[in-house]
Image (cartoon, rainbow, N blue to C red):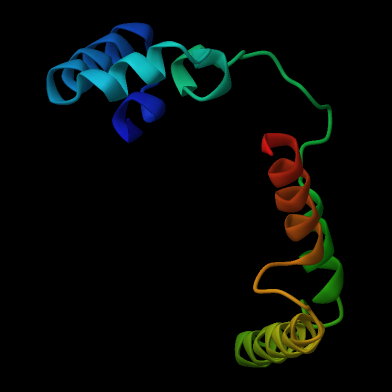
Length: 118
């Protein structure tokens, strides 16, 4: 299934689906019922969906190291290491407050799905 999902052309996708059919008929049947536009690269739309060229993670990271970018490489790397360690520590502290093994939003979504299926 992973090979079919990663395929970037329709012929490649069809070849991988044929391999899956030979390997597991039930898996092939289940996957065939799903819309490949939702899970396979070869069927994704190619037009741009957003005019923003960079994502927010990149922007946030660049902002966090802006004062260290003009420093020597060792100093820059040390400040990045310190920033990431601090980020991980603050997130760990926040996670310790969680009531469940997963985050509150994920838990709420799982509970909603559980209620729908009951």
